[in-house]
Image 1 (spheres, one colour):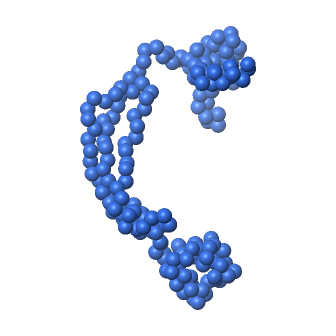
Image 2: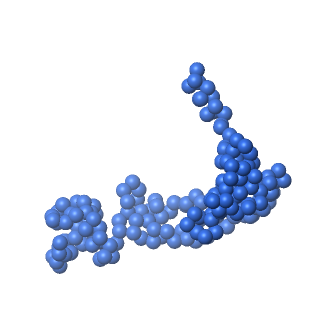
Length: 186
């Protein structure tokens, strides 16, 4: 499909009137919605505010941003009060860029607390051909890389993994799931 000057001018006029890409494609004929969108982007035509709100409301609205939640895995709670900071950011509303000030809450970094009851076994770094019935078969690394290996620590008779990797592989069933299974059985 060729975009001659007449069709481009008609596209610009219909775009400025606020018609959608689908409506413009139907009026131009012989062109798809995606072709219209592509041409609009190549011509760098200004965007329009999306339906469902007005431009003034979107510009004055404060964005509620919060810092990432602290991890609950062995995290020590912070005792200091979080500090609030104001920062000017640029974001787009439709196809226009708007500068606005947002409030950010800055939290202190947390040091992970190691627990003493977790013992990570020393991996023996065994290849697949070196595994036996009594070695841990937990894969370590990317199988496509040269440093790929298996844990190789001593495993129990009823498990293919050592105690540490068995705890990772076999997670306890939640109470809700236990109750659902019991109800289904009987």
